[in-house]
Length: 157
Image (tube, rainbow, N blue to C red; front, top):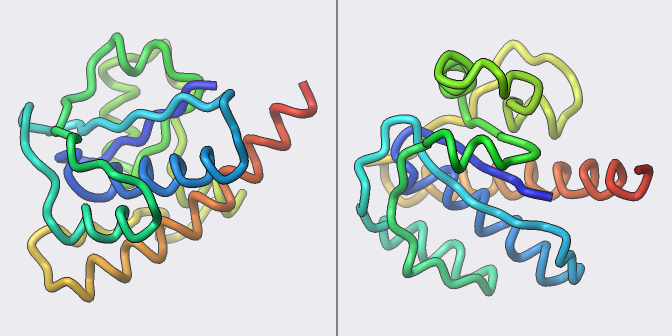
């Protein structure tokens, strides 16, 4: 199962989501998972902020080689699930690739399994470390719920 996380720049939220899901993949020997991340407005080749690398490394996942990648039809087109951090990311993916509409979800709404008044995961970029830690805690909880849901769906197939 191919999972794609999408944010704006692919240096923070989508990278954290990728890292947290990679940890769950390792812990649960979920070799059926293929995980990537990208950004709707990513500048190719940017490195991840040190605070993000530390947060993910503390989880036992090394993403120090990660560089930002813009979303493209190849990456999106092979994904079974595309999880976005904000409504405008979802809308942009669907605008660019309307044929993928049924694969694109807001991470928060999918994980909580209902429509929300505030479905976006706030962007901590440029904020103090505490804001990154808060975003990481939120994303980690959402990714844990997401893993449970997709694992259950996989087993039901």
